[in-house]
Amino acid sequence: MIKILAFLFSFLSFSFQSEEPVSWKYELTKIDSNQYNLTLDAEIIEGWKLYSQYSPVEGTATEFVFLTPNLSSDIKEKFDESKPIVGYDNVFDMDLPYFNNNASFSKIIDLQDLNLESFKLEIIYSSCDDELCVFRNETFNIPINPNKKLKFDDNVTLEDIDKYNKLKFNFTRTEFVKSNFSNSINYIEIFIFGLIAGFLALLTPCVFPMIPLTVSYFLDHEKLKYGSLKSASLYGLFIILIYLGLSLPFHVFDSLNPNILNAISTNIYVNIIFFILFIIFAISFFGYFDITLPNSIINKSDSKSSKGGIIGIFFMSLTLALVSFSCTGPILGSLLVGSLSGSESGAMQLSIGMLGFGVSLGLPFTLLAFYPRYLSVIPNSGYWLTKLKVTLGFLELALALKFLSNADLVGGWGIIKREVFILIWVLIFLSLAFYHFKSSMNKSKFNFKSLTGLVSLIFSIYLISGLYNNSNVRFLSGILPPDFYTIKSSENQCPLGLNCYKSFEEGRSYALENQKLVLLDFTGWACANCRRMEENVWSKPNIYNLLDNEFVIISLYVDDRSELDYNDKFKYINTLGKTQYVNTIGQKWSAFQLLNFENASQPYYVAMKPTGEILSEPIQYVSEKKFESWLNSSISESIK
Image (cartoon, rainbow, N blue to C red; front, side):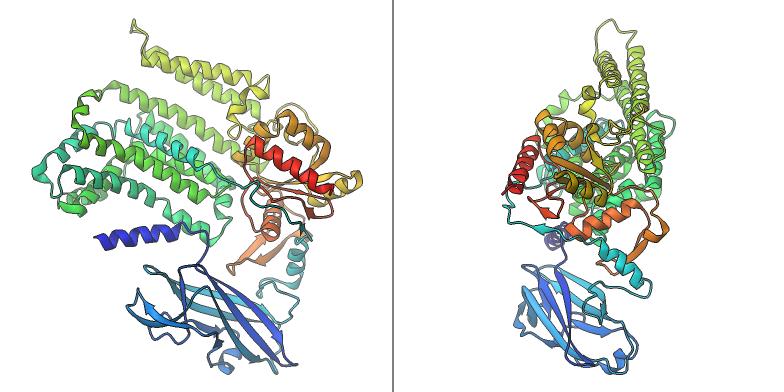
C-alpha cells in the first residue's frame, strides 16, 4: 500500500508540472544540392532520463520514423547520437544507456529526385525519473526551406504561414531586472475560498448529520484494525485526496493546450450551459428535487467499505463523497467554474481550491475522533439546515447570472448591461431577505434567521448604491460587468474613460504620432482579474494619472468573438502539431500573445515604446503598489 501511495503522489507531482520532461528542437542544414544534415536536440529537465536508441528494454528506446512517402524506405539506419550514460536505472532495476540534461541526434539525409517542400518525422520516446515513466510521440513537419521554421502540413497553405508570420512583431528586450515585479497568483485566497466552500458543504443536510455517526464508528475500537486515531486520520486524508483527484483531468487538458481552459471559460455556449446548470442547482437547493448519483455506484462503494483496513476506509471516504453529492455537487460546480473563469493557471487554481474543500470537509471528522468530547457542542440537525440549503439556492441564482453575463459580454449582445445585472441581483437578495424575515416573524427574539435577512437587505442597499456611483461597488469588481458596459450612451468603450485602442497597429501609430509610451493590455471580456485590476488598481489617482498622461493603452481582447474579414482569416500548426484556426479577433490576439510572449493568461501587461522596445518585465495580476512602481520604472527606463 505504501508503494501505491508513493506512486499516487508521484503522479500528482507530475500532473502539477508546468512542462514536459523532454522538449525537442530541430535544425536542418543544407550540405549540397541534395544532402541535408538533420539535427534533433533534446532538452531534459532535471531528475529525468531520455533513453538511448540502443536501450535493450522494450518500449524505452528512442526511435525516429520518417512518415513522408519514399523517405521511410530510403532511411533505415539509426541516427548518430551523443554519448549516453550507462548506469543503474531504479525503475527497471538494471543498467541502461540514457541521457541527462540534454541529448543530440543527427543524420545526413538525401533528398535527391524528391520534389518536397517538407517532410514529416515522428519521434517515439520514453522518459523516466526514479519512480515514474511517461511515453510520448511527437511529430514534426520540417520545411526544407530553412527560412520557414514554422511547422505546417497540407492543410496549411503558404498564404496562411505568411499571415501567421505577420503576427510576429519585432519586439526588443532591454536588460531589466526580472525579480523586481514578479507575477504571483494569490493561492492563499483560492485555498480560503475552497475552505469556505467545504465548510458550507459540511453544514448541508447531506453531510452534517453524518458527523456524529461517522465519528462514533471510529471510536468503536473493536471494528477498527488500526485504532481510532489512525483510522480517522486516514479517513480525512482520503477525503482530501478524492476531491484533489477531481482536478487532475484539468491539468491534462492544460498540458495539451495552454489556452484550452481560457477557451472553455470564455466560450459563449459553455457559459450558457453553466447558467442553466446553476439554475438547476438553485432549484435543487430550493427542495424541488435532489441531484443524486445512481444508487448502484453508491451501493457498490458502500459494500466495499465494510472490508476493513485501508481499502475499507478509502471506500468509506468515497461513499461519503458519493452520498453527499446532492449537496456538495452544486458547491463543487461553483468552485469548478470559478477556477476555470480565472484566466491565470486555471487548473492549478482548481487544485488549490479542491485541496481547501477537501481539508474543510475531512478535517472535522478527524479532529472530532481525536477529541470526541466536543461532539456534545455540535447542534442537532434540524430546520436550520433546510434554511441554509435554501440560502445557498439564492446564491446559486446570483452566480448563474454571472455566467449569462459572460456570454453576453463575449457575444456583444448588449442585453445584461451593468445596471441590469445590479438590478437583478438586488431582486435576488431582497427575496433572500424577505425569505428569512418571513421565517423568523413568529420569533420574538432576534435570531440567526433575522441576522441573515438583515445582511441580505444591507447588501441589496449596497448594490443599489452602485447604480449611482460605480466606485461604491468596486468590492464586486470582476463579478459585475465592466463599468463602461452601461446603458448610458458613451463613445468611449475603455476602462475608466481612459484613451485606449483595440487594434495593435492603430494604437501603436497613435503613440508614435503623439510620442507616448504603450501599455499593451492582453485582456478579456470574461476575465475577472482584468476587471479587478482596472477598477481597483487603475482607478487610483496616481496610477490613473500615469496611464492618462504617459501611456496609450492597447487593450487586446482574446475572447472577442467578432469575425475577422475573410482575407484576414488563417490557420497554423500549434506546438502540438494540431491545426489552429484563427477566425475571430480574439483568436488573432490570443495567437499574437502566445507567439510574441509565450504566454496565454490574462491580464498580461507589457510596457513598451511604440517602436517595440520593451521597457520592463511584463506583469500580470499584481498589487496597486507593485503596478505603480512598475509603471514608474518603465517610464524611467524609456528616458535613459
